[in-house]
Image 1 (cartoon, one colour):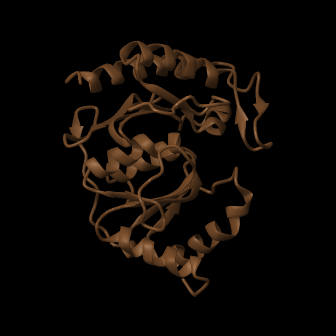
Image 2 (cartoon, one colour):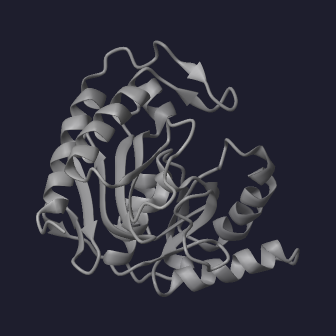
Length: 266
């Protein structure tokens, strides 16, 4: 595989970011997908099709798993792009400038390259398996804080209302025993912030793979741990939960998750 592949992926994603950053009418052309909180703008498919065109030129034999596809033709593909064209669509619509473009490349079911880009601040998070994680050329490292000293990022899995009780139990268990909570609205950026040491822990009870596939590699290449809440590997072609942290707080979070899911006191 091309040793310059990661740089080529970054160039493609940065070009796509121009469309996101320059959008002046993000609130126009909004339509609902699964519910009134699951929205898509005119820009989501536009950015995705740009990424598809450029990425498939780069690796024509690869499959493509994107958020805005109704169906996914990925069976039998050794290489697979996993893409979220605008992660944090509600933030994008509201002009909060906390959205990202997320691209992961998996080979034989293992993510090998990852790029997450916040075009508003020109922050390019990237990783290559075995080569480390980086932000604009600076090496990333997770913290080593326990839960007690952790700033916790979380997602509310708002598209999946059945997860609300479980999410609230996590908040109830963690909030009195950590530094504080933040809810940013872009899971891909939450992962990267853990990798960069801006926060210490991230969890969400249900996400799609395009939300975390790239971020998961960036966290692990920064010395962290990325799994589902039951400790199993992250799912790359179906929905799953997410738990990302360091060698100290990640096991603590999994222990809390186990108690919650067993119905005991967290």
